Image (cartoon, rainbow, N blue to C red; front, top):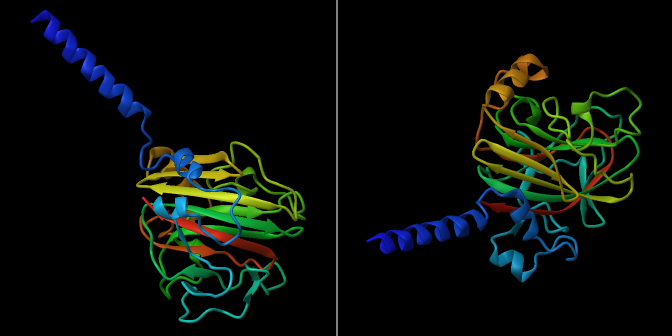
Length: 253
């Protein structure tokens, strides 16, 4: 009997070890490792397809996207050199574009390139409704900005890689203006991970006490529906400055 118990305990231990070694569905690093970093822009490898990745932008058409609160794709955006980019000028808020579909749990990979003093962002968990003017009124933002070239002082939660107006980046692996950066975002339930160029820059738990305190004590206290939605659209922000976006890939998890 004693030997049998030892065998059972050994089997349980082996199962625990194997389970601990497996990647969880929301494991950002494991999901990031599924991507082929050397593939041509706006393409998927067979490996990526088998893992469930899909292209949200083919580099040629606006299929799958529309203007926020519009039924069409706005002319303040264009496709240039197989990239989404803005025609707007003046550094003011303009028309954002959003996905045609809503997403709940997902991993998102986007390559972006900045010009001097450019400002933009990836906004997610967005509600589309005419009671709102911009996506940022409901959805959190992965900040995309040339903070080094920005003319005014910025808070640490405004710099490249931050979760805008909430969490500053833990690391600063951003590349120089004119170079391609890779943004990687994982949303799994209340757990959100932001990565930039392969490094984790932000991790947080939505609706945690810390999150609620930050949400209610800062900019978002003036926006009652900000962070309210667990499922929503994904947006590329148009802040009147030039940014290029390409290789927009998503995997539902």
